[in-house]
Length: 83
Length: 286
Image (spheres, rainbow over the protein chains, first blue to last red):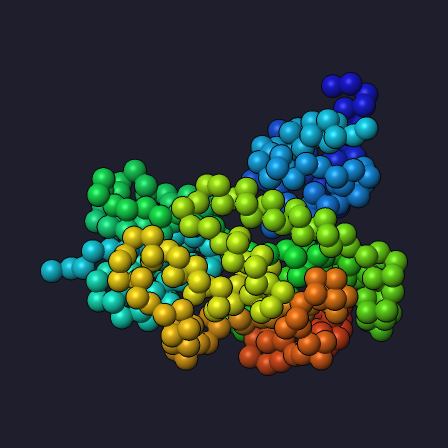
């Protein structure tokens, strides 16, 4: 993981922690998926994406936003979308 | 001789579908109707493997928890998949409520099962109830308006992405009508009107008798017999959200159902904040 990737991951994980009110004891890694975090369902995923977009100042491509497998895939999509 | 079995599988919405199916005469005469929960396998009367083995028709909601007995279904069983009918649009701050806790038997899902990220933050910051109400209605939209157009396009993409996996589609119905009529009580609880449309679409995929069903008659009968099966709580809609979405059915002074009584939006927000603060104080003291 490059420094940039690590930075994107750290910020994404921070947004996820705030959005789902996940405490620091709960591990969030690239492999973490919606099934690992209580409250992360189809509905809340949309609002998570809005929070991520606000944090990074971007708009993610909607057609690629709802089939993401895990946090790593979300981080990769953010990296591809950032200018 | 027993009737063929129809099983409907999915989240809490399918409990309402199950109840409505039983009010439809031709369906109740032709099928035994079973319910399989995707989120609570401990519910009584879940279909057994023996039930699955004689299932003639499975209505399966597309869900991360798929129908668990699919391997046992007979090869003759018809399976129709459909989406959950949910919606974020009217509640852009929908969130988990960390202060909610089950209080059976009166509040089995807690007093405030639907959270709000703005109210959560205000409670975290220690604002008074009056200050929270003032901020929520007077300053929030000026200082931090949610990107409603973006939310609209993301919701459209979310529903369409999910429906790619379903035989029955509902996104077209929702986006064509949500401005003209109320289709949801909360993010995950639809009104009788859209539930009836889902039922018509489900039945018409496989049962010729359903072609003759009148939409208005079905809605009337369900409202008469069951009312609003998922309308125990109507989560209030912020007036600025209603304006941004041009909700023509919205009334700012409307009241919302809440476990058998009615609340205005301001009373709901006030009660929510007051309860959250009490819970937080009790937690801190403990």
